[in-house]
Image 1: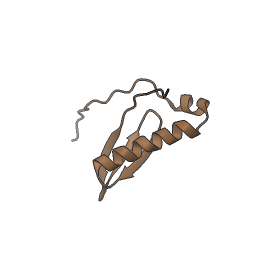
Image 2 (image 1 turned 30 degrees about the vertical axis):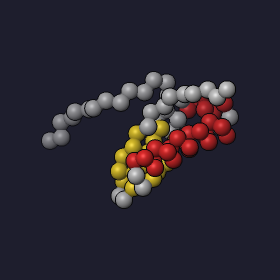
Image 3 (image 1 turned 45 degrees about the vertical axis):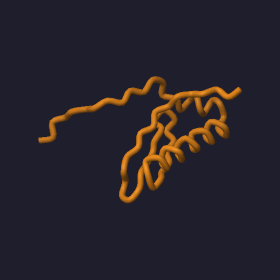
Image 4 (image 1 turned 45 degrees about the horizontal axis):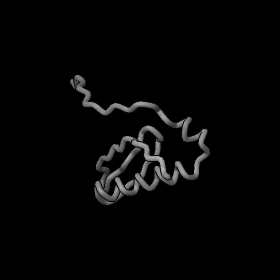
Length: 75
């Protein structure tokens, strides 16, 4: 039986495409749409977990991840 793990996906537009990042594992991918970038990131994370040594996976994990808005003075 496969273990299901939950990670954060951050996706942003860059030029004519989208970049997808999993910050907990420092794994990234890209795509022409948000959906494609998300699918490609899922595949990249799965391949990383399958192929990397367990100690490397654990070493990259950053624990809990919080995504929130940040307001700063810009001038």
